[in-house]
Length: 306
Length: 282
Figure 1 (cartoon, each protein chain N blue to C red):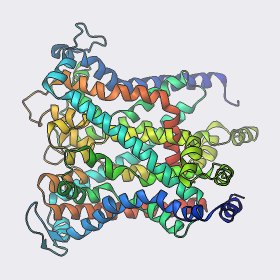
Figure 2: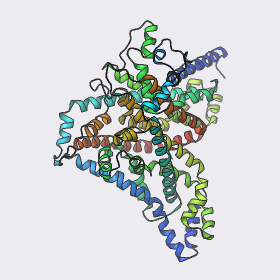
Figure 3: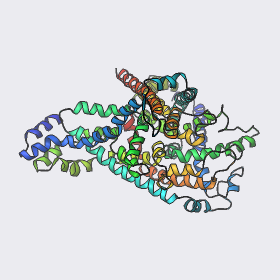
Figure 4: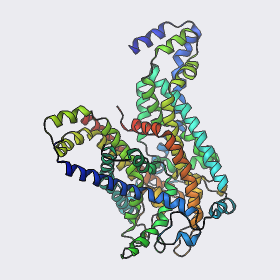
């Protein structure tokens, strides 16, 4: 229908002048994207891949280095591997702890048996719009070893205070605490949208057939949420691979790199130490990982659609 | 229906208690932040904490403007967020319109290139873009934070999805009346896109307001900083002994957060629909 209308519009042009305009107009409309994309994203991407093969420090002259940046990165750089391990920890705990909690939250906030639903939704969704920087600073105070609210609370309850940001074994969990606080609301929004798109008739039919509440949950709710769960899994993993703000503001990656993420490592090497080539190698590594995951996502979604 | 009444009641009670407890935990950092911003240092560190300050003080807020260029940071953040939002609305709706309502040679491949570009993580180009900005002399400038990000691919995709659902008949009528193609976009289509534009505006504004990595990379002098960068810089470098300006940083965090939450609550509907549109691609 729309196609035939469009086709007619093209044959019914009133004058030659408009005809020319018609033909080029869409190119003008989309050209700003392509100009900006080429200048600020495509060429820099190619440039990044190029300089990852060079030894290039700040104002010095780039020196061709082949794949030695990557060799050093993968075989001779324990800090990089530390950052990779930390980042995998962030991604895994986001996927297996934060996301399921968000699903639970969405189920609760969707329940008709919950009082003050709108009020609680506003509370739980508020973290979505808070600035990471502001919240990380607040958590830094709450986590403070001597005066922080958390330790005061623990001591009041008779526990032993914890060095939330200074203990190498604890700090990753402290970072995840902030991530949990900030991300569950956002993910719950997706789950909630998914829950609300399940037709009521399904539940009614199941109830008539005598399905119990848990049966309805496992045979209707969960399968219907499958596409949303896949989507959430992907954005959670890709998002946490790129984590930067929270550990940067909370600890700057410390103590002794115990909370350092891969992007923080890239930033430190590239912007603080001005090792352009080496940092770009880290960037290329990240690109390959994220690109692979995106492709996997596409295949999964195709598979889901059958 | 099949459950016994008492267990259903118990479940409801449990659900409400759990949600309330979780809600308190979720709200606590924000409540604590606002409350601490009006307290003296000694009271911030009292336990159990007071919700309403015993001695109410505005000193933390005053300090922000005397000891740091906080007003300047606020202006920077606000101007950048507004300019980038306007630019993004214009360029994404224009390109989305182009992709949705015209047939032209190369449309499909160009659309795929645009979609594919979302797979490039920003971190890959962090270094080259930083070098480019330095060469252009754009560091410490608004331009570095606005110009590269004026036409985001995801935004164009969202606009195209929305515009595809709008009727084409109006365009045809306007064309017969002699309207230019840009005139059709500006006067006929743009007003119809209002819901999508609103969602896009909220997402873009928040993205700019809260963005951290890129501003941290290109903004080096104190005057040019945005709010998040400036506020974190107030805390100084992390040293074990020295105590950061606690009250003042809570005041700053409050001023970053509260206006955004208020705006969000006003346009919540658009925001949620924008998020889910971005998420559940068809």
